[in-house]
Length: 164
Length: 196
Image (cartoon, rainbow over all chains, first blue to last red; front, side):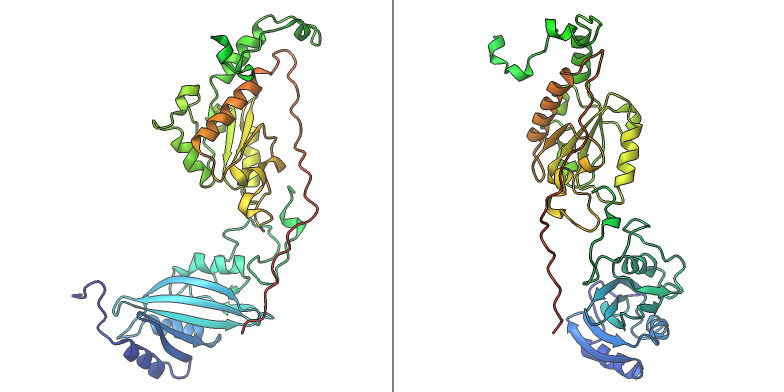
């Protein structure tokens, strides 16, 4: 491809402006957070469509999913997608707000297959249910664990400690 | 020369009182069996966390666990008689640990190595942590430290040798069950505040 490692043919502000223009209806708060990272927020309903278009974007093209994080923001939950663009050697941090009352969001497994285990971990720890996930089981904790321990309001129960 | 050896490391020869409780006179059988057992312990490779690094380094030339006749680490419980629990036991691992312990052949011993195996250590009262391996299996020797140095492991092994040599061939003394009372007060978890 002729690109050397560590080079970025596009200016960071140009990337942010391009994303804000191409995804004017879906992405909000597009800004450059770090020298190689753009941050944006996305509506829950538009996530699957945005993910497909982000991956297929001609100039930037976020082909790689590095991480999916589940975050408890006390008022609401967040599903955060860290995706990487080989074309520009930059990252995008995509925040999706998930209400606690209905903690559901579409899976991006069919867009980025790497999301599989990450979404299972977010389900396990924070309790975000990923709709359409092929195999949404707990991944770190035992199968009969009660609750999602990284929720801020999680209270440890005796059920999870049968040996104590 | 014999006075240089501490009392607790001396071999226990059968005395008159040994012949009174079991109605069988074994003369030196106790001594022979316990001597053989205590000097040919096969440890089970059961490293769960950073204590495992100390356990493995104690097997190499710098510390050399082979000096005590215990260098034969086995990766299967069926060939082992000592389980060194080196690391944090979490709730998901607990049934596996119990099954592996049950698969070991008698007589068998357990060493709780490090703060996590003793009480949960820095992860005490965690949502997925067993607060000490003695909640699941009986522990013979506790080795404190985070993690303990190989020298500490060796001292624990020597203490275990003393314990093995006290076992009787005719009537094995039953091991005491795990009795660790849970502390009354548990440090409350900090309450999450509203985000600014």
